[in-house]
Image (cartoon, rainbow, N blue to C red; front, side, top):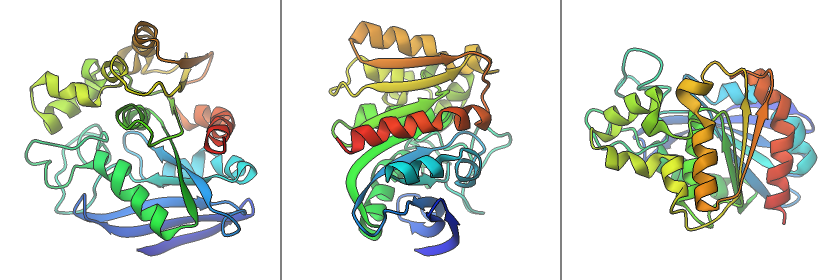
Length: 276
């Protein structure tokens, strides 16, 4: 593991590391914000999963999360969104291949060799963070758009692993959204039954843990009706009796301006659960 960025920020440090991922078979970058309390005590960790086209940089430079992480004493880890490299499969367009890992374990060629982002963010990265940094095993997970999908799926599939979960503008039903249909067909094949393992709306019905879901969605989001469809999650949670707080925010779009406006509320939500 090599530190490639180190910047003072709100009394702590915003770092970026590079390591060789066994799960993905390539070098990966991930960002770590260590608040000023780091080193004096083992701190809880919030994992942030970013959306299509993003790297580890988008969240740490645009969301303004460090201020709130420092206030609450929470470490924030933000990985890249896919495997990277010249020998890693890719595709034309922004919504498949590098930058678009969709937080699944691919089962179809040519993606199977590297595209195992689900295992990476749920297993390998937390194990590395907990071995190398002054953190506890108290975990939370959040994300935006494709990353919001990843956060919801990770929490719903792993009872007891996370203390809290939230999402901004998540793709809640990728099996029924153009982005998800394209990615799932490529990574998982044409059997739609296999897609249900990575679809939050499908998972809510049988989730073994009723971890409350916090979702913020801008009502002026250009992808609201076609790709995100938060009403499907609301209906699924109502049918299953699963706790959901869905905040519909008038005037806000899909951008990081939206995330920056409400990230403080989300970090406070996670901090309360992580330190309970």
